[in-house]
Length: 344
Ligand code: ATP
Ligand code: MG
Ligand code: FE
Image 1 (spheres, protein in one colour):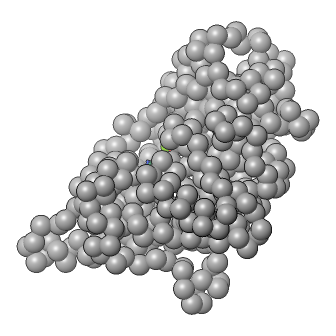
Image 2 (cartoon, protein in one colour):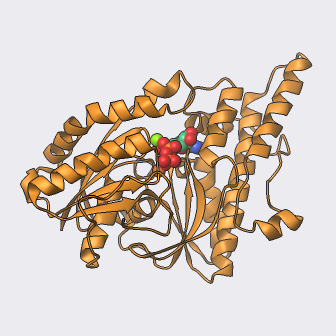
Image 3 (cartoon, protein in one colour):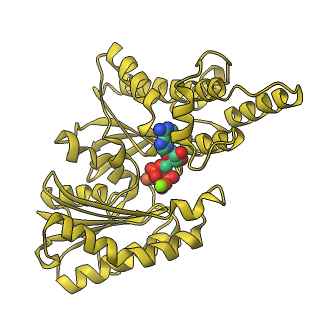
């Protein structure tokens, strides 16, 4: 089937077009630069940017795919979770398209889309798999038995998301927003063992109570204290070493828990998605630790890890292929849609 997917849960206006598992177009307009001076995404600014970008982005996707809108067999859209006002823009556009074209509409879960996107690059999804989704807005471990119906949360962050921690630490180090890629780059010339930063929820009772949960706010505070102490003493802050040691702490916890989840659930595949999956150290460490346990790791290329429309189209395509029921035309935008609801 030819499926068009729309994503507007955060600051990316994404329109993707797929045929089966083949990616035909992935048009993305980001408002990230408009948010940079605020050091984080401003919801009202994001909503307005989606409104302005929506029609041109749909047109660009159709042009790239070399298709006419009337050829589309189904429309899929992110129904949640995400920023309420931002989601509304995508949902309204998708409803209008589906109604106008007389084609089925699927309101889908953003997290399940982050999982489904991998089939565009590596073929049919490994099911069951453990999915680790790490971005600016979420950090979760999921057990996915069927991406169209069975997504079960194993754990999540109890405070900051992994990407949020990267962004906050980047700010402490005077690096631009969004900070992840800058920390990643700075870390390459630093030592990951220079500073022993804390690994949250990895030992004792914390681990027992939060086996597959994450906590990054203590780590962020530890980095802030370390940097402040340095500044007070008048010594220069070794940016590369702080970046590398911080990054190691995040990647150590993420990969340890993902591999442990797979082992404990007897699952042979780990799939990583979300913006932080672009991190170079995370990829290497996950690969290394999983291989030691005979577990495979799949990570889509960075452009498919960050928010985009192709991931929504990929999930939509799978819903059509597996004969799942479409959504009603009055489907809501649900900012706190639970991960267990794949289609609204
Ligand atoms: P959502 O959480 O809804 O998916 P988002 O915009 O926060 O929304 P993404 O666009 O998937 O999520 O990811 C952006 C995040 O990924 C930012 O926090 C950014 O710093 C982080 N990131 C991007 N590249 C890297 C990298 N190489 N290393 C670490 N973090 C990175
Ligand atoms: Mg984003
Ligand atoms: Fe996302």
